[in-house]
Image (cartoon, rainbow, N blue to C red; front, side):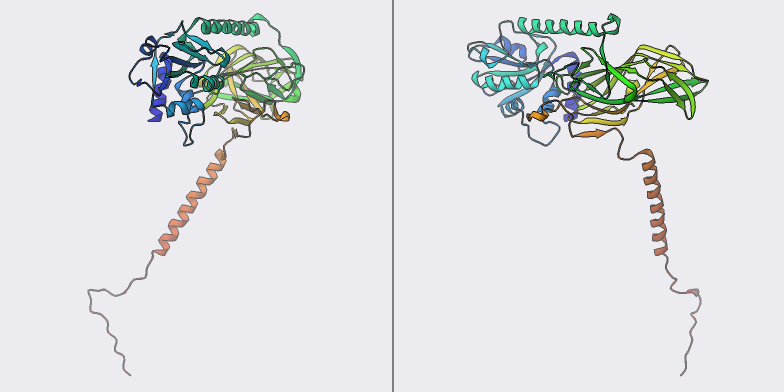
Length: 452
């Protein structure tokens, strides 16, 4: 039932706004949100509790709907313990121009018919609700997204933030020529909190981390009906990285899109080989500029869902062709075998991921990029202790290499087959019995008289 509810929520979110309603005094079953808002009074006010990323899936995670553990979240417990509660969705924004918008407990004034408790993400939204919901008597609480409620102040803030983000994105796009700074040594950490030259400070809404020690460049070339592969390992000692504002985008929470841009520059010439034969080369100063798009879904999983190779070029040797790739974007179909995936609350550690291949200016050649000795997580860990205040990786880590490899499984299955055959043969031998009599039962039995 939970799976059906979650699947329904996923499709409903594409066409409507999710909402969770709860009240202790008033029966709200079957009453649409629009009707409740129109009938709101100072004696029975409506309290919208909103954040930009609210979905029913987010609420389900906070309510521990997918585990046997009881919910510890204040809002989840409030909904569960309320006398009346239900979920709804509506296709249009709710007009609430007369509402009192509260972004802190100090701004609260009694007497309004509609309140909007506006948080930047779930934590701030929950804190506001915990401080204020008990002060507003006889209220009907409505958990929903910021976009679902129209109010001049909240929409103006949203437009300004969007304009600033768009400006930042445009200034960092390759087409504008906005320069990235530095040629910093590896290992690479994004956001670069460990780089004292950049002085990037942790922010509340940055909830992801990436660590990288090197890459592998893999070239795929189609020859008639066969595919030929050549690869070159590029360690961190042969790379530097640059950084520009906007190279990292972290969602507020575990649901949403996470972006990491890797601006890598070779410091030495490298050669790619097919077995022991030279196949391609790259020169010192060449760029490997790639953006990774990671998506966290409402089911609690995150994975590499797309990537863009901004610039990379190879010079072919022998039978291999030269090729160049610029601003080539691939989607989920091309990245599904990369092994860059995990679950919410867990980091991914990988000695080397599968290569993600991008088209080039030659249709028979593709350039693939694999991450070497990398760790990725879609959240930050912070500790109040002074020596652990900086964001760091969690100890809950999943390795991209499974417990059993293909060879291990082959050995295990082969051993089980042999053991099964041995047991079958042993049982068959144990079932062999000696005949009770050796003569024909239809003939007269042989009687031997023994005289003393």
